[in-house]
Length: 94
Image 1: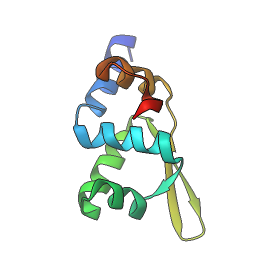
Image 2: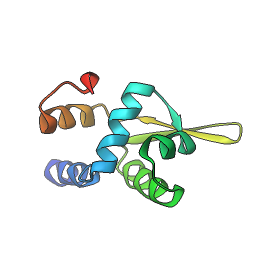
Image 3: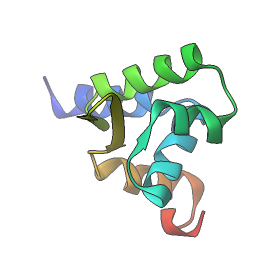
Image 4: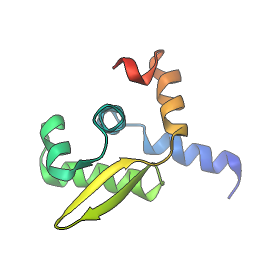
């Protein structure tokens, strides 16, 4: 895959306000379960899971199973730089 296609896919994967919020919150909070993510998004499980799956497929997020729960965290730190450029401030300031 060309670098252009790869970057276009990365931009598509964060082209929704919910997905941007997930990345920002995971950076602030650290790894979170689906239930914790649902809570801060105030969205149903189906919506939350759909957005997580999109970002996981583009390797923006990684998941780690601990006992009965799956924890999500930001895997691709390049995404933080993209969000900072888009929003015009350091991701740690959100």
